[in-house]
Length: 118
Length: 360
Image 1 (cartoon, each protein chain N blue to C red):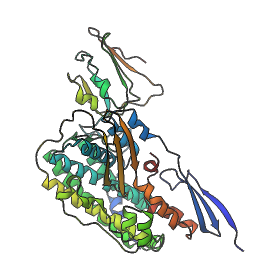
Image 2 (image 1 turned 45 degrees about the horizontal axis):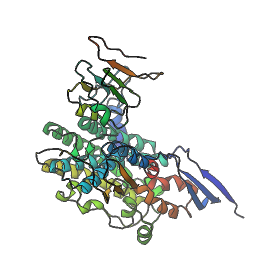
Image 3 (image 1 turned 90 degrees about the vertical axis):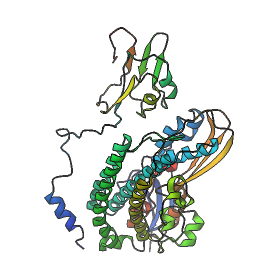
Image 4 (image 1 turned 30 degrees about the horizontal axis):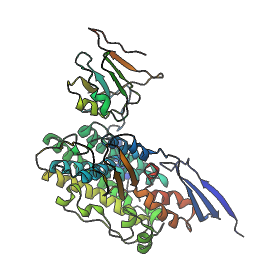
């Protein structure tokens, strides 16, 4: 009848299994898929990422040099990163932080500046 | 004299993992009739096959269910590969098997926790989900995500498991097996658990076969039906026997699922030791030719059937998914009449309902 007693005593003597988040955070694994970033200086605006995206969240304008991305539609599958010919897209390990207003990421081909609109 | 009343076992209930509506006609605490109603999570995912091309559909099909997601992707990819005549490299078959068996373990552990919660045993619920966290860590370290892992593509897999990772996986599985053996005794031999499960929801072998029950629902009643013996993916190189119990009640189905967890750990160990070196995918060119194909697979809850009809373009003509919970619902409606009202949560959870699979 007291089958779980052994498990109860071993749990009492070990340290707690829960983590005191947000004071203690677990470092994510290196392969973890968090959010998408584009290095706009390397990008050639070929539009390959737009063609393979399953959720249609990337818009590329080749003539004007504009790369737009909706982070709230993205499912972070990573197909665009695999198909990018110049390897300018990459996935960072941390998921985007919580927010109460939706925003778009808008990057243009300029000499040195990048714009992230709100 | 006895009175009949109607109780709505509603879409919102603390015990249900997903919304399902049952109208129970009750006579003095005994259920006499049950009328189901579905459709609370219908998302219309099958029509997206006509709007997204066949490579992008893998990511849509994976999101039909969160618990058996890798196996949905695998079945879709197997169907398209059979239609296009693509041969997947052997290392990719082994990798698909390893991820599928990991999903089977975490699905059964999730079910065990919810089942214990259905009759009030919250301690067992917390302990099983703590063990499940180790499996989620393995999934995250090998593919990048915990629940929807997105590793299957048409032509193979996208990620690989290195030798160091394989050794780490084996160490974690040893730990999981040790902790599971402590809990095994509680599930199989505890007096309270047995009082709530033995003799409840009996389904005889003929009834299980006639109603089309699949998975542990049929195996607990003595029907010897496991699709992994047909030898898809890497199962043709591995050595195992399907697990069958005879009594047909809730206790027998519990035993089948617990033993399947240990069998899955053994299958992963065999697969990791036998996996050869090689490529992990082959390139896919062109569109699927016109035609129809049917592909089946053994998910954690039973047999899933994919029917694909293609017309030669990159959009599919029709995609139809028949999920295992959909096939187990008639069996549920057979065991409900005649049971006591306090056993209704136990009976609903003994079929392992995955309502988002049922309604897509």
